[in-house]
Length: 288
Image (cartoon, rainbow, N blue to C red; front, side, top):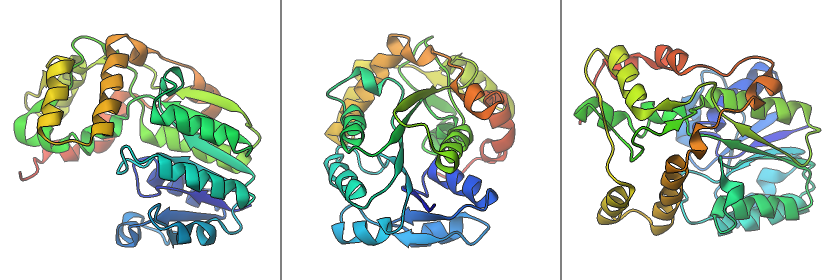
């Protein structure tokens, strides 16, 4: 058994690599950024160069692979069609099982790229498991970090709506378990944290850990989408954000499931545990 982890330097991928390393698994970490990968882990991970824009890398990367972790890379908004080609290559390569990470609610929107990718995985004929996680806790120490530390703001058009945020380490633990064990063909899991929090509550808890006041700014969804257009965001990414905002307003993101508990035989990490583990990033403001 050889496991291939796509987007291995992403929020979830890098944690899956850590889980597989601890399990002494036979795996490869696929990435187009060899420099980032070599600096990311404190152990020698087996890294292979891969680029969706270079189809010549598909076959060598997939050689000998029996189980695959796949997701829509964060840096490729609106470019899901190249993943259709890769999924075809996965089927031709004889991969035995795919663990595909989608997103909460993607199955409810047939025109959404993530739903289309789910369907592509199903049509491939490769046995598969689909993971649909809610929003990541780790967003606060990555893409939201500069705004938090330089402006003392947390911006999201959510009002008092709640989100059952999940720690990416829990998503990775679920994915690694499925990759190591297999046998979950055709199943789908909705992965959430154990509590649903408003962004006002999130801001208050961040304030406590950072020892300063962090304010939740909640514009209207229409105003936030216009701001993204004015900042020349990719059109497909704006569309993706639009349906995420709709999910929040409709209460979908407040759903709390037991899937993490059932799969890992332990509760998901709490938001307070996440804050404790990452506390230094908010206590030492970054330079703008």
